Length: 294
Image (cartoon, rainbow, N blue to C red; front, top):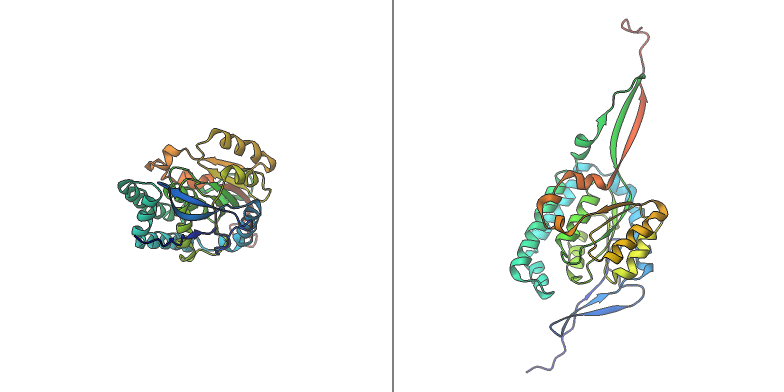
């Protein structure tokens, strides 16, 4: 029997399109059945601050892309995830999922990306409007992305839960900072590897692993985070989000775990929750040289 010690992979965090180690140097061994399977970074407050700065820096560039182009990029994520199905299934099983549940989780994740990608260039046609007014103006209402969105992933749905938050947020131009599942962290960084090779500009998606109880207060209190989307099963952390988010009146989007696992979440209203309405007035210019002018 070999006495060789296996070299464990260190799953780094994902910031600005790169894979740095946490600035704190902290990590934890992920253990299953008393066997170490990987090293996982414990992100710090500084890592979160860097992630928000990265998301803010790329926001103008990302939102200026056409909706059709963003849809193409979302489709590319699904395409690459499809090509790496076996890796993700093996990784989910390694972390404790059974094979049947792993296959379902992966198939639903790919299909959900495709679903939300299709709404990228349609959301304003459905929810935008031309409003009747009693003056000589055009009045338009359009939806615009909120800005930098903080996301807190479900603990029990490490891939589908992540996809169900990230894709509805970024498909319309938001940029994101995500705190991954503590229980199943490996899948989130493998997803980051897919995203980094899917034409998504660096900084649009940032993913941090580590302690939720340590990171959530810093995310919720950060003054440059405009909105928070979350699926949090622990009542104390959920209450913490609501309490800390009032500092700059962040929009909160809570998606229950039951919705994550059902098709109920596949709705344009989820995308709309990560957007805000903007109303524009434009004067009607009359041509007084025309014979029809009066």
